[in-house]
Amino acid sequence: AALLGITIASGFVNPTMNKVLANTPLIGGIFQEFNDSMGVELANQDAVTELNQSLTKNGVTVKLTSAYFDGNVVSITGFVDEDVEKGHNEKGEVSFDMNFEHNKGDNDPWLNGKSTDIRKVKGGYNFQWKMEYPYKSFKENSTLPITIHNINGIKGEWNFDIPIQQEKNSTLVIDQEQGYPDDEVKIRIKEILTARASSSLIYETVEKYKDDEIYILKAIDNKGKVYRFGNGTSLEEAALEDGYHSTARTKMTKLNSNTTSLTFYPQLSVADPKVQQLLDKKSFTLKSKRLNLGLQVNDITKKGSELVIDYQFTGLSKELSKHQLDLFENNLKYELLLVDKEYIGEIDPENPVPPKNHSIRMNKVKTIDKKTAHFQSTFDLNGEEKIMNFKLENTILQFDFSSFIPAKELQPFTVVLPVRNVKQLK
Image 1 (cartoon, rainbow, N blue to C red):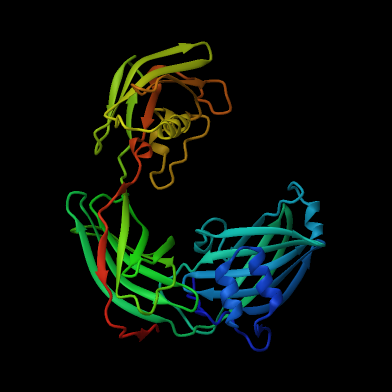
Image 2 (cartoon, rainbow, N blue to C red):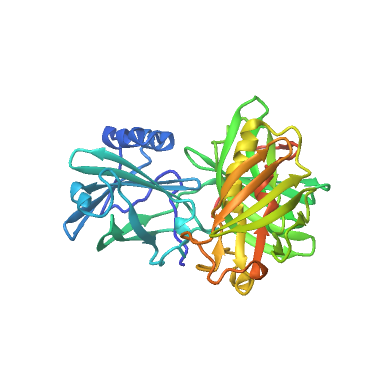
C-alpha cells in the first residue's frame, strides 16, 4: 500500500474542500458525545478538520463530518441516516463493512485495532471510527481513500477520499536497553514522538521464542505522573542470531516537557508450544514444553453421542483465587480441541482455525474438585461441531497450556531522558 502522509495535530487539510475548525462547539460536542478527550483537546486547539463529504447509495446517506490525526491515532466522525434501519441489523445497531486504500477484506492494515462507536441521534446515527496509523514512514500531502461496501447488509459503494498532510512532530531519541536474562528477553526504548494531544512510544523487543509477547503496562515519571499505553502498531520484525526482533509504535499519554525520567512496567506473555496425544489409550499425561505444568487424563469414555474426558492439572499454584479458578474453568470450554488425525496438518499455525466437520472444540465442563484442579469435559459428537466418522483411535486431543497462565510482570526499569535536544520528524 502506498504510504500516506499524516497530520500530526493539525488534522487532515485540503483548503478547497474542508476548513480547519476554529474552536467549533458542534465538533467539540461530538467528541464529548464519544468520550474522546483527545478530540476535545484538539478541537480546542483548532486542530480538527471539518469535512463535508456526503454520498447516498441505495437510499442510505453517509456524511463524513470531521477528521484528525494526532500521534498514532486517526479519527473520522460521520453520520448515517435512519434508512440504514432497513438493513439486517437489530434496531439501534449499525455495522460497516469497509476498507481503506482499496484494500480488500481483512487483509487491510487499517482494520487492525480499528474501533467504531455509534450514538443514536435525531434522523439517524452519529459514528466515530478510530484507527492506528499502520505504517512506519510518512509522506506529505496525500489522501486516505475509504470504501464502505455495505452497511447493515445494505450493499453500495460509498467512496470517500480524506485529504492528509503532514505537520512536523517532535522526536526524543532515548535508545536505552533493559535485559531479562532469566526470561531470555530484552526491551529497548528507542524514541518518543510527541504531537499536540498525545505522544507515541517506539520500542524494540527481542525474544528467544517467536510467539512470546512483551507489553508495557504503564510508565511513571520522576514526579509520579502515570502514563498509559494503547495497542502497538508493528513496524518491523526480523529473526536474527540473538532472537526474534520486533519494533512497535504505541500511543501513550502526552509526555510532560519537564519530565527527566520514566520507569516502565513491562509484562511477558509466554507462548508454550501446543501439545497433543492420539486418543488410542484411556489415560496419559500431557506436559508443557516450557512451563512446569501437566494435564493428567484419567479416563476417556464414549457414551452414545457424547465423549467424556476426566482430567486434572498438575503444577498449578496453590494460591489461585476463586476468580482465577472460575476463569480457568471457563477457558476449558474452548481450549480442549479434538481433531481427526488426518486433518491435523491442515491447521495453519499463523491462523489456527480448526477444520470444519473434522474437529470439536466446544465442551461442557464439570468441576470435580477445585482444590486438585480436577475436571470433566463432555463433547457432543452430534453437535454443531463434529468429526465425520468419529473413532477414538483416529482422534487427537490438542491442548495449549499458555492460555491458562497469566502474563508475568517483569521487573520495572528506569530510563533517563536526554536533555530536550529535539529533532523534527521527517
